[in-house]
Length: 279
Image 1: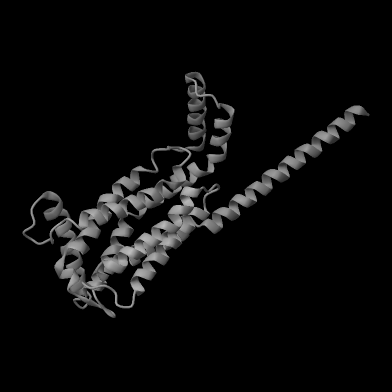
Image 2: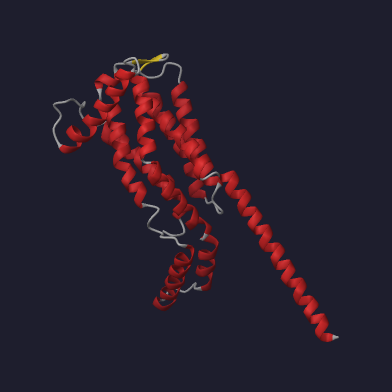
């Protein structure tokens, strides 16, 4: 699990997409008469909030969806910041963790115990909790599922008109499905670029998720495609602001160059010391 920590966010996002698709296709439209804690108190109140925002925006449900989605993303932003920082610290430890695995290749209880102890020491020295990066994601998932279902299951929200389309119908020009796929790819690509090491699973998810989003957006109402576009566009901006791969890679390169320069200085000092001893 620790070796695959950098791809946890991508796997969780893919799982979220599958859960949302499966759940929404089997549930009834949401109304004020819906029963149950999840439907009546969570999803119905999300619907009411979007409708309330829409009334301030010219009774345009499209803009209501846009603004409410952004508000939800801003509310959970501190969780995302914590998650990204935790995952970045963990990814920076991957080379050292791999070195430990090479140091203790044995599978006997004693070797595994010593490797775990050294791993825990590394995490403690770096101030990293390997489990902490997953917790914010688990908190976010119910919120995102509720937002998704509020839009998908509300007949009122899907009855509105937004820009060139009817929210309850498919985008006739396929603009939203394309944008949803592009922003999904951009988010995954930016996240992957910041990782010191990449693998086949990460690459597959980077290309697979946008394709899945595009195919689903082609067949779902425009209201859902709009939600995907806004939430993934927000994720792109969030990644560039909090976990900018260009900045991270530049800092990583500068650190490596500084370490190499320091190593050269030490080697040079050792050679001088040896020469002086011989004299």
